Image (cartoon, rainbow, N blue to C red):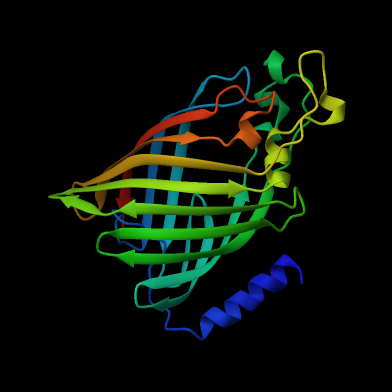
Length: 258
């Protein structure tokens, strides 16, 4: 049974569980509106060898439907909602920093690395939501045959509110299979040099934690921030093309909701 057949089977099972009513695109603290457009900017330290802190600009366009939703991370469909549980299917892009050699051609430590293609991943999610927050489990697999890898994630987002502020501490753990880790961080035989040894990545566990918030100016406009820390597992951080196992990031943004 291939991945698409498995997903279709899961979808068929979920459809008979309960009615379709959860807005799974809206995480704790986010505005519960159908559409959102906005712009966020910030910085993240790049873990690849020879790289530094990167500035980032993120255009945001989100649609939060009762059943179908999409955002900057991908698209999804809610398939069931029962008591505190809900779930559905996801389709996302697995982006690689090494996808375009122009981005690292001036980096001597990455010179000679071959480009890695982006992958298309599909999978499912299950949420457990209460007034205190949301626990979210995701499982994704490469359906584009780019690296044929898999990943699992478990994250909890707390839901706190102070006046017009929504404050959301979060923490999560993730697992990446050896094929996916190797696609992004391995060193192939044709990439070996005097300063770079052959490396085949192992499957890897990592974790992240942070704090995000949203301030509502009115029913349409809001301000958001997100700051956090992530740690790469040894299967990735042991690679000779990785220089930092610790990742720090922060963004601020302005959004219009309607």
